[in-house]
Length: 121
Image (cartoon, rainbow, N blue to C red; front, side):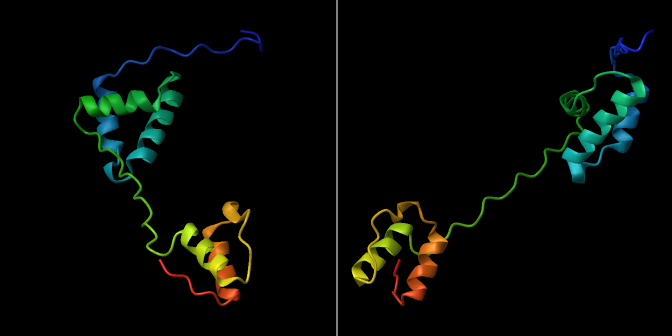
C-alpha cells in the first residue's frame, strides 16, 4: 500500500465479547463522556467507524443506557424588566432613554444606581 492510500475501515459487528466489554465499562453516572470514550475505544481497537450513536443504540438494546441529565434552566430573574428600568430613568428626567433599547439590563440597573433613580418592578 503506498502512502496516498488510506486504510479502509472494517465493518463493525457487535459480538458477545464486545457487548460484555461495553457493559463492564459503561459509566451510567457519566453517560455522555462514557459513550464517547467507548466509541473511540471500539473505533481504534477494531479499526472500524463506531459512532456515539452506535454505542447508544447498543446500550439501549441491552437495556443499559442512562439518558444524561439535562442542564437545568437558569432561574428566572424576578427583578424589574428592562422596560421598567427605562421607564424609571425617563421619568426621573435625569437622562433621555431614546435609543437605549439595545443596552443590557445589568448596564441599565448600574446606570439607575449611579443616577440614584429608584426602579420598581
